[in-house]
Image (cartoon, rainbow, N blue to C red; front, side, top):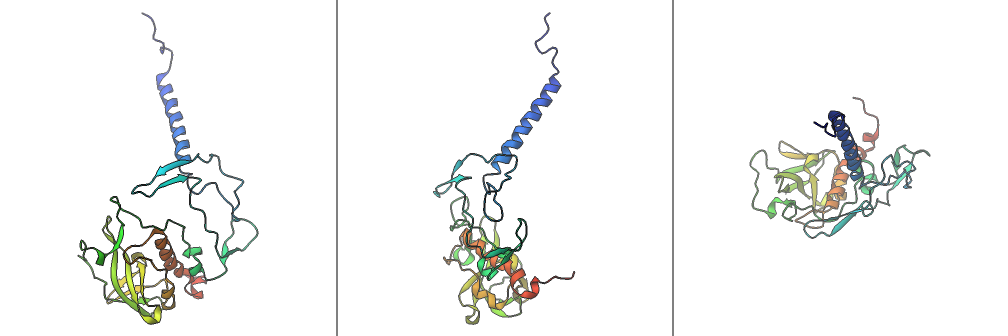
Length: 257
């Protein structure tokens, strides 16, 4: 009886080495796919960084977007960075913080920063805008908790700036994303959106602590009364988040716990 060709081969060892090789190649592949956005790396001045890491930037891949929204090629076709940042360096070296040179909330820097997303609404799986006002759909109603519509909106400095006119809901997720505020004439007039996570329904009022009454007129508007684009969402959320630090000088001072 002849010995099989693998008779002197440690099959367990071979299997283990094949697994390690496969696992290493998998990590290499996943890491390169993860580099399709945000690469090549840049330094604080916007120049290409000398150290790009151990993995090479992947070659271009073109994705066909759903619902007739064209194609996207990455990494070369990704959105360019914003070039109008009102910031200045606080030190000559890289890695030090930048300081705002204007109104940081209006300029969208620091905690108020926003990314240049596409100026189109986010869609659900059927190609419809995900986030819509409740008044534009008859499928939803407030089933639990306090319905905030009609309640006054109180800013972080105690000023009453308007009333809640509507709720903007994420239909696929079935939750409230924004509150729509009808501002009074003294605080800018017209309607603005407030992220639900930045508001608190407190008794007979809705509190928005992050910004003050004088800031509501500057809240970025959404162009359409029945939908909000991804870029508009970025700017709206960034504005309220920035107020947590920039609404007053006192908030920028050291705080004792």
